[in-house]
Image (tube, each protein chain N blue to C red):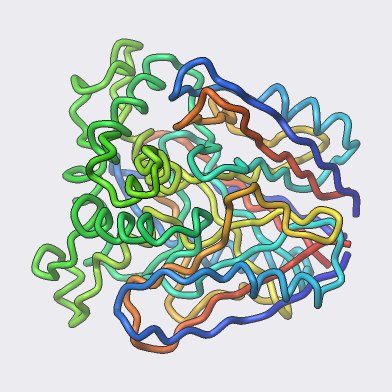
Length: 139
Length: 139
Length: 139
């Protein structure tokens, strides 16, 4: 069994942002030399997500709108977490809803994604340095 | 380390549908010969889910009702993704909420599921050919 | 490839409860002797979650409040699953929203978590014996 580990760093300009990281995962897969296995891509923060979906800017807008208006409004006064001095409880709930990690299958040396599937980093409380781990296991 | 990969195809009659695929995953596990490991079961589309829950038709009805009335109503006019000519933005948001993949542990040659756990394919935009990957790693 | 499997048992006093299980996962990792790999931590029940987030009691309160008021109210009369004699349909929908499993990367013999990340068991229908599986694969 081989394993390969790499960390991606982000510091977004906006507080919420969606970033396509499929290319970075592909680069790490090539460096790993792994042909059959699984690639874990996981946010190392509790106010961010990693998810698989569509590279379409209208949909990214829909996701951000939905997170604010349906899943968890930002307004810190709604949350007890606010009493710690943090204002990002909504970012935690958004991370829990969308998930913080994905496993991408690796087949014949490639990410075995469907035709429209791409891997994204979802930053729900940005403008500071944050990390994602890519860990690939296989042979 | 052994690996085993198989693709399931679906073409549902209804646009939304929940299908128990536990038997298919068990069949692939037997074919793999793997005794200890992990089975990834992952939708290869961005408008579908794979999830673990209960084989109970009342609950399946509750899930479909909840997706429409709480998570993301279908009405395409609510979403910018609509402007691309697609009408399925809600299916994307439903996939993001319920997840598109699960990892089932494999112990002593069996899917190590709890007493009521079953693996399901959730089709949120069907009536066309779509795929799920089963990838089992272990020994 | 090595594998290590362990089951945690819970019987919570309250019907809904959030329990930090990071220490238990670390203990199992030490016992496994695995240095590079992945640790699957997965609820074996369909009315519970395993998730990664923050060890902060205000946030735990926020999560429980959000599950009741935004995600899925408990009131059994809202759900068809109720007709089976069960009253816990909401617990199923909460499990589907928050997820029932996480994969924690293992690097250099340690859980490779970010600075604030902890692993939690989320009990959404407790006061009875339930289980979580920890399964670690690697070398």
